Image (cartoon, rainbow, N blue to C red; front, top):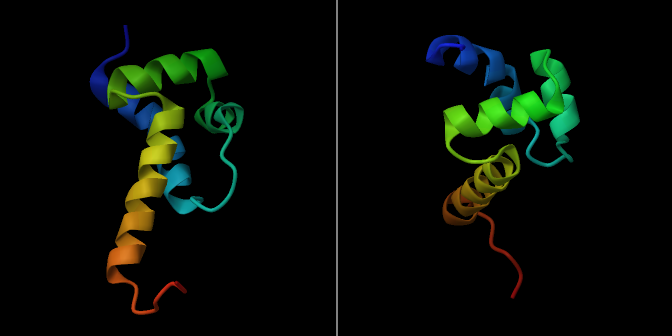
Length: 79
């Protein structure tokens, strides 16, 4: 069984990539490949350590970023 630190280190490239690529499609298969594990193993480890699925994490990060931009952007959206 992997310990918490090694699992977090294993999925960190994926969480970093997600945060840096919010405006592009993010595929679980690519994230898993970046981490050097299968897509199924990646999804299992990710949910175990982060507490939500990779897909939900991606969605949540995008929503947080959108809220931030809406709140702190100086430009206004058209009506």
